[in-house]
Length: 243
Length: 245
Image (cartoon, rainbow over all chains, first blue to last red; front, side, top):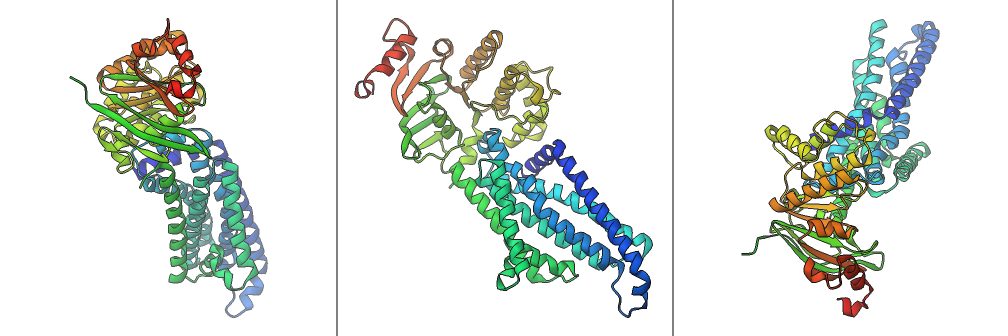
């Protein structure tokens, strides 16, 4: 049942021209950034060659690219997640799922999986760009994979948060803005430093961005996702009268 | 011999803010019966139907579908229901076949039986040649038919239809009424409508709501206290609350 709902979400998201437009613009921005970083790197490469322990191409190009995508994911995910439930409510299609003999947990997990699949496509597209580095140099595969894992966990976190905002709103715009406001607040916590930094998904992504994969960061993302998915399930169960 | 009860509600209550939108509503539906749910706008018909279908949590009371408690086992109870809300829940970007198959899968129709159910639902609703059409491009009447097909695709014993003939042309209205009668003969149907002649044509019994309360429940003949159903209905609604109840 989760797969049926996830497949339908994928179909809905990919049949909307806005999804393709967003994906195309994202690719354009990432492509431009990638080429600009590559260009910068090639210009300073001669100086770098004289340094001991100089930064390699992967940390100079792929890691900033992942960092940019992390920022863009924070802004784009609410635009996709608002469609999941809030837009169904506005379009009055929600009644089909609400009255189907499907548990709220399955609905939430199906929608989450569908959205995560779309976000994974974005991450894979950036992975292809990072893999291009291997054509000209010895790429640091570990760092690239660490970044991709980080991006994927970050996307899951934003998807879970967006899904919750979508579940509690009747208006898609409110859902999108709510998710964005929370993400930006968490991002600002990371920027401001201090002990609250640990609450920010971005802070935990930064470790992976620099190649450190720690169990604490992974545990944080798992808790973040599980927390918001459980809140979404709880809200729908209450609304649909499930005990 | 009386037919078995397929759906029953007891003391159903739902608040909209502080107002009781549905107030102590109880009735039963039996197999082989079409029950008309009548009332003016805002009488609580749609809210009642949404609670019966499991889309809205009641603030009080209980619902049983085929002897299954909706509050305790919503998954089992909902599997016995087909629901067409006031606005058919259709995805504009999907094709008719995809939409109906999605609904069938959601209602646990086994994979080998999917196509058989799809064909039957389409045939009953006159959609056999429209499977590949985009729902967003269909006229209101066709969308309504897809909505009905979606409600019956898993062949549920209880079907709930909220104003199913709105927006249809006269020929379509005749076909849909015939279909409702057919569905009522094999299963049971709750039909909410404003159209009293529709009730006369297809319903066996009626429940009349006013301000969220049941003011009449019984056979159409008992409702027909005046010369025709329409004046009886208006007369009933005009009575003071204590007399109507």
